[in-house]
Image: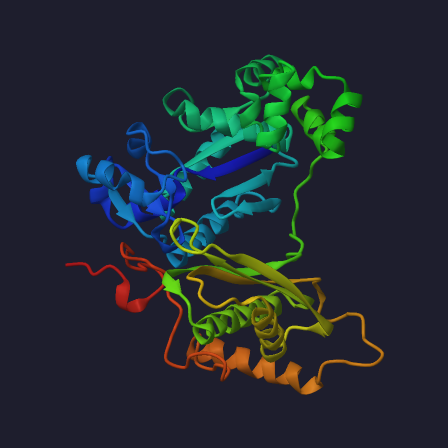
Amino acid sequence: MFALIDCNNFYVSCERVFNPNLNKKPIVVLSNNDGCAISRSNEAKKLGIPMGAPAFKYEELFKKNGVKVFSSNFALYGDMSSRVMSILSKFTPNIEIYSIDEAFLKFEGFKNYDLESYCQNIKDMVFKWTGIPISIGIAPTKALAKVSNRIAKKFPYQTKGIYLINSEEKRIKALKWLNIGDVWGIGFRHAERLKNIKINTAYNFINLEDGWVRKNMSVVGLRLKKELEGKSVLDLEEVRSPKKAIATTRSFEGTITDYEKIKERISTFAICCAEKLRSQNSNCNSVYVFIRSNKFQKNKPQYRNGILMTIPFSTNSNMIISKYAIEGLRKIFRKGINYKKAGTIVMGLDSSESYQLNMFENEDLKHKYLMKTIDFIQKKEGQSKIKLASQDLRKRWKMKQEKLSPNYTCKLNEIIKVK
C-alpha cells in the first residue's frame, strides 16, 4: 500500500505555527517579488481569492476583509519541510519526497497493521512535533493514493484527514467523484481533449480502450490508467535525477535602459546558474540569455529577444559562463528600450565527473580548483563575499519582500523570545 502525505496549505501553516493569532483568519502567501498568491488559508479561499491571484488586483479585497498577506519565506518553509520529512521517515524506510509539502510512503510488510490507525499516529506526531496539519491518502497505487488524499482534504470532518481506499467499491466511488481535470498527471490540454469526447471523470477515463490512451496520451497516460485501475506500475523514486537545465531569471523593480546595468545583472544571473551547477555536480556546454521590455507599458517600444551561446567545452566556472552570457547580451541588446526582465539558462548538462573532452580546446584546470575554493569561502562566510569584476561589488540582488515574516528557525537573532 502507498500513502500520500500532504501538508495542508503548507506555507500558511508555517506562518501560523509561530503566530497563533493568525489561526482562523484569512491568510495569503505571495510568490517571488510579492507577485501572486501561491498559498491560501481556507478562510481566504472562501473569500474567492484564486490560486495565482495577482496581489495588486486584490489589494482592495485584502483590506476590506482583513486578509493577512505575507511574502514567501522559503528559508523557513524549507526548514519546516525538512522537519516534517524527518518525522515521516521514522514510520517507514520507503519514502519519496515528492515536493516541499508532499511525500509518498510505501508500506511493505504491513499486512497485519491497521493502516488507518497507523497513519493517525503519523498525523498526530507531525502536528505535535511541528504544528503542521497534514492529510493522508492511502491506496494500493500512487495515483489512487493521490485520489484518496484529495478526498481526505475535501471532506476533513468526515475523514478526519485520513482516507483509505481498500476495496473495489471505494475505488469506483472515488473515481466517479473525481473530475478528469483533477486527476494527477492529466494536464489542462489533455483534460480539455478528454472532455470533448465526454470523458468527464476519472471513471470515464479508465473505461477507455488501452490502445486509444497509448496512441493519444503515450505510455505515460497508459501507466496512469493502469494505476487508477488498481494495478501498481509506478514505484517510489528514491533519488531524483539532476535538472536538465538551470535558470535564473528576475523582473526588475523598475525598468532599466542602461547596458552596463543589465550587463551586471546578466553576469550575476550567470554566476548564480554556475553555483547551482556545482551544487548538483554538473557542467553545461551552452547558455541562453534573454531580455524583455515591460509588456504592460503599451505606450513604449516593445522588444524581447534571446540567444543561445555555445561554449566549446563543458564547464561550471563562474568566469566562463559569465563571459559567454555577456557576449550573448551584447549581441541582442538594443538601445532605447525600457527593460523589465532578463535571465540566463544553462543547458546541455552533464556530470562534472565524466564529460566529453574537446580535442582542440578545454577548460583551464585552474578553474576547477578556484571554484572549489570560492564555494568553500561562500559557504563559510556567506553568499556574495566574492564577486567577479563584472558584478556590482556594492549591490546584492534582493527580491521584493515587503511582508516577510521572521526566520524563526533559521536565524538565531530571529528566534522566538519567551517573555
